[in-house]
Length: 127
Image (cartoon, rainbow, N blue to C red; front, side, top):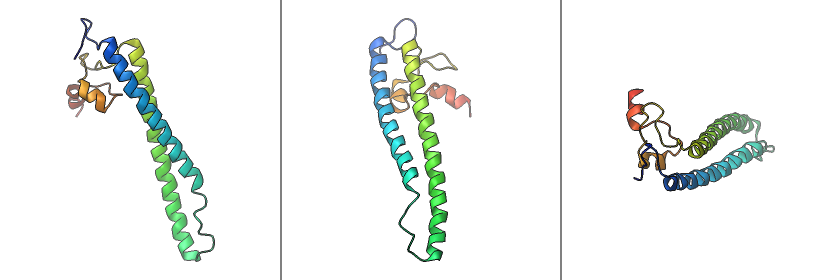
């Protein structure tokens, strides 16, 4: 782990994390578009000519499906926003520093959760 005297990740490390985050933003944005597309296409499931009973069940599941898609979209938008905030921290050279302890967040944790702002130590203190 390359850390300079200012208790931060090196510019090389930050560039590596930036590439990872940009890739995750692209994937997450694509997934968000798929979720939104599925939400928009939920209007017609081809049940117009089926029995009224089945149609009522289908409409109920359609409402649940729209709610689930809406929740997925909201979570995905938050994830993208958190990743973009991480890019800002990279630009500010504050990325990877725990906002509670001021210590560096473990490299492996950042690879798994690149938008993390808390170290495991700080996260455990919250419990």
